[in-house]
Every structure is written in C-alpha cells, then in structure tokens.
Amino acid sequence: MTHPGRTGNSLFDHHVDTCRWQRGEVRIEPEIAAARLAAWFHRCCAAVVSRLPFGLDTVVAPTFLGFALINGGTFAVDLLVLTLLHGMVPLPVAITGGYAVAFGLSYVLNRTLNFRSHAAVVPQVAVYVAVVVVNYLAFILGVSSVLAAVGVEYHLARILSGAGEAVFMYSAMRWVIFRR
Image (cartoon, rainbow, N blue to C red; front, side):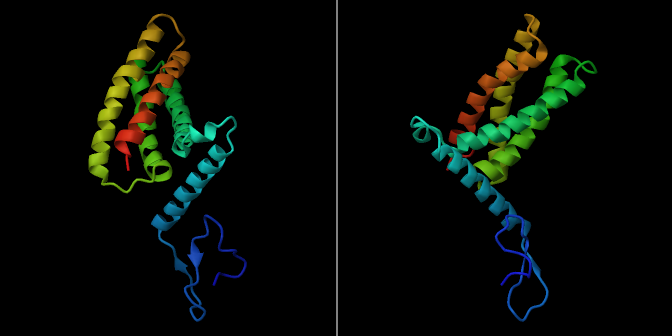
C-alpha cells in the first residue's frame, strides 16, 4: 500500500506504508535506495547498448558504457581541479591533485553503480590503488608531462593521455578489480 499521492514507482520514493493499520511511514534504508539507483543505471546502460547499430550491441558491454559515462564525468572533475591548481602549484602537482579527486570518485561510482560489486572493500581498494599507481605513472604523469614538455598545451596533453588511460582502466576494472 502506498501513501496517497505517491505512485510507489519512483526511484527516489523512500517511504512506504508497511500495512493498512499503520498510519506512519517506514523509511527505506539508504542501501535499498542505492541498490535501486544502481539497478536503474545498469538498465539504462543496457537499454542504450541494445539499440546500438551495426551489431555493436554484441561487442559493447553495458559496463563499458557505464564506465564511459562515469569516467567522462570524473575526467571533467579532473580537468576542473587541474585548471584551478595550474599556475598555483607546479604542473605535476596540479595533475596529481586533479587525478586524486577523480580516481576516488571513479572508484566509488564504478563500484556502486556500474559494476555493482559486493566484494570486500579493503582488498578491492588495495588492488585498485595498485592499478591506479601504474596508470598514474604511465599515462597521467608520463604521457601528460612528455606531451606538455614537447609543446602540447597542457589540457590537450591531459586529454590525449586520457585515451590510453581509459583503455587501461576499463580493462583493469572489468577483469581485475571488479571481476565477478
């Protein structure tokens, strides 16, 4: 039984009546709301992938689309922090600051929304940090700094290094960090 005026179908509808004779409402735990949000996110990604043309739906996994959406957003956060820090601190420090914020946000969003992992957090974070360190040294600092040193504008250098980073990180997340 739902509360008058509520459909009960909303993703964010956190209140339900437990039975007819109970006048008050019971709050659904945040974990249930998070699970609903994760399920909704996955259904949306799967629906988009199922409509891809040219047989791409057989090649592109819904988690790849989810990764692209999440990490596209976290990459924007990375560039924002980089832009804010550039000129105030040396470029490698600005790159590191942007990356640190983005990789933390990426882990949380990919774990909960995209890969919907329920594995133990501590071992998973340890593997994620190891992957991030390799990624950071190879793509973020290495490629970005080399490109900037040869005259490529620092935003463009970071975007170009992000292409290699994306392939590496998705592969690591799907087959190593969040494997099922």
